[in-house]
Image 1 (cartoon, one colour):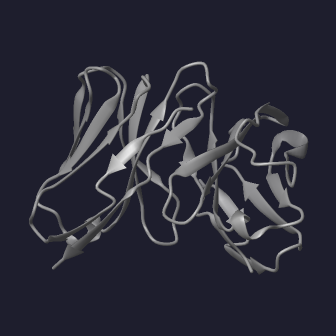
Image 2 (cartoon, rainbow over the protein chains, first blue to last red):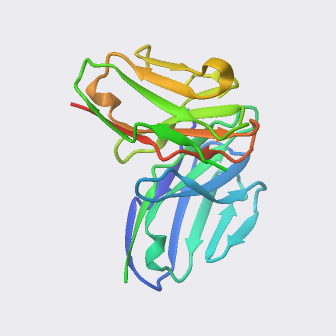
Length: 112
Length: 114
């Protein structure tokens, strides 16, 4: 079935550093999404990407929809302590009712 | 506007017992989704309701899981009898329409089966 491989699984960085994480798949997706989950909360949407090659920013976050439609990356610049959490990529295929396929998550720790 | 709520936040039960999880979607959202994250793995789709109808239940693990959404408002997910491998965090999400409309997630129910 459809599967997303997300890496890295975890990252321990110093405040101010840049972070990069990515997702790959053998399947094509029509939409790529990036979510952040904080302790005790559900995932919250950070960025949505709708077109192959699209590069979108949201503050210090930048994400790209791979040209093959099989991959996406998320960059966080100048990390701060509140960036701590688990980041998930998710893919969506049209005509599947909105069902999201998630990656395994990247757990980010930021040391002040 | 209230977000998606889930009850309970935590549940600890013994193998063989029954547990019922509840999800209240955002008011007016016809689409309701259940997902589950087993420790350290991906968040996996379980099923999708449109109003009170099951649109897609392809992710339900087996027949020990029963989801309902009577009246098209809140939904329940019952696990009977629970097994050790059912432990995980169960998320509910809702959206205004299917296809791609943003899904808003609840805080999840952490289920531990001993």
